[in-house]
Image (tube, rainbow, N blue to C red; front, side, top):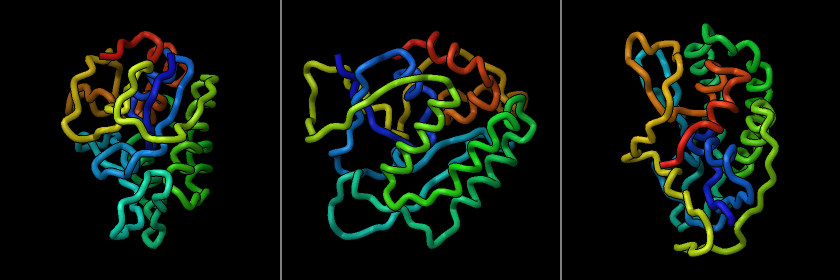
Length: 204
């Protein structure tokens, strides 16, 4: 059975739970772009709690498919994201182990948001040592009757409780455990154990 989901920016942990536990992955690329989703944002754990990292995109007055959305580089958001991530995770157990690979990604400047998300995901999968193959949709379907449709996971607004297992987080003594942050949080905190963590979670 196919599993349908959206590519997103340094995707939330539940996204990688799906990738770790399912084969026949199909990425939705024929949908219309919507705001307030993980397509162009992620959340990390900063000193003040949950912190947003957002990729600016070029706007126009027409409805666009997600695959046609272009990234705005007029503002150096990559530099800002690097600095924010370094500040948040410099003292985490595995940050130095992955830092070089992460910095290399920010040197790239893909034209399209979809290309960036797929490229970043490719790197994260490599760091997780998770080998998957995927396909892309060729047309949009509102409902899939013969597939596991988890496209809802891209919604960054009104996010549900996934009851993910707690793991140590750098600022948990101040703000408690925050679940389903960007995969970066899990990687920097759990390192090589991240894949085992993903394989043990339940998708609710």
